[in-house]
Each structure stands twice: as structure tokens, then as C-alpha cells.
Figure 1 (spheres, rainbow, N blue to C red):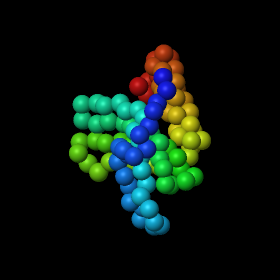
Figure 2: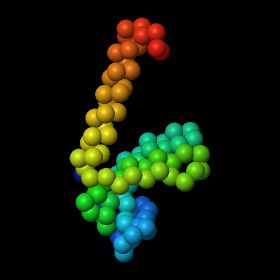
Figure 3: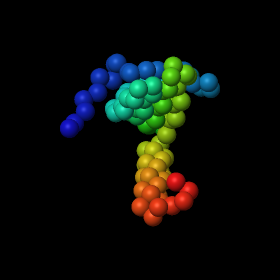
Length: 97
């Protein structure tokens, strides 16, 4: 399903510590939980970082990581590997479980 962005209405903005300008963040996907949520989206104004990963939990300051697309892909890859390993360990009745 195509996504149509309203580039004038960012989901949230970040003010960089160094440099000038505002970093605009546009949420593309989110997964809420009872006390937390994960979201990811596009970033404008922080090139070469063009995507973000955000974790909000229990009203704490959110963790926001600005990434290049290949870095986000690497996070997805290592997380998938960890989940696969966990599944294999459970299937083998691993005593560490």
C-alpha cells in the first residue's frame, strides 16, 4: 500500500545538539504495547541518516536512533537471527531456557 506523506506535518521534530536546523521525523509504522511502543519512520534534515527507530516506555524519555537505511537493515537482520536462535534453542530443549 503506497504511503502519501504530508511533508508539512511531521510526527515530531528533533533539535540537533550541533548544527543548525530542525530534524523532522515522519512515523511510518508503530507497534504499541501496554506500557511501551516501538515506531519507525523517515527523517529529513539529518542526512545521511534518513530513517529513525524509536522506543517509548512508561513515560520515560524516548530512545530515538537516527540511522541510514543499511544500518536499520542490519538491526533487523541481527534481531531476526536472535529470534531464530531462541526458537532453535527452545526446539532443542536447551537447558539455558
